[in-house]
Image (cartoon, rainbow, N blue to C red; front, top):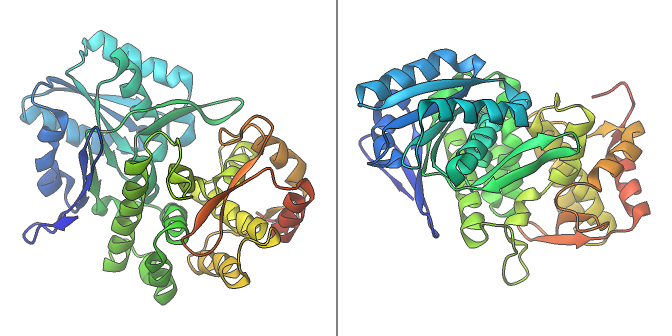
Length: 379
């Protein structure tokens, strides 16, 4: 990791078979955009910018900048949020690429949050069996999670991200200025993935939040910038060693560790028809697996209790409706992290010591949920 003393842009390198860089800084149309042509590749002639309708103005500005650089650039507007992650939306994007004559040397840019990144990455992965994609995440969630690591996917009626592929980007541009326009709840939602990184790998993240939760939720603060960089670095460290989630070494679960809190979180999202913020669902999921690990004798009380305390500090939820257990339990059984009929949960054996708990007792799971259950009218 290096930071340019002139521009202030931080460069994080992702190694492996298809190496790329993640740039974190300010000014998409300035210092960050300067790195875009190298990411697109010298042979790229056509570029498609996939974006949600809420970012029409920014997508248009990016297209115009690409036109000035000599690219045949166009925009593809998709629905906002999880509504974009549908097979028919992907098919629409493919039709645009086909009509424009996109070849294997051309490229896709995603501009938006995690859903746009997942969809656009999937479109790039499947068009001609794979074209270059550069992610320009505009939310905290997308910066620290969806844009790095090469996972792409769309949803089906059976669950979230059940159709997808691994397709690493050619580069990632994180413009921190975009965070200043985010609704506060969206920024807080993204912090769930950052806090997750603190519990599974980098406790300094938790210390920064505890020391000044106000700064942690201030998009202009140096503390939030450090949290973003640290969160991205955790993900890089994990995915480089286990790109396709086949397992880590030395007892570490590898990339599966990044699913901490996601098993219940995804079930909540499905129960809410994907209208529930991803980060909020994952926050509840983290509190839940902390209770699972405590009941299983894997996690000490202090670390288990710290989950609720840290999440509360930034305004993330830690409980969900007590009357939804049966529905959520059924949804977890079809989660892609399950093996056959065996439920798997990423849990902690201690701070920054993730492991996998497979096939826990059903009564233990129910009891853990009772500990986080809230009255039916509460959300």
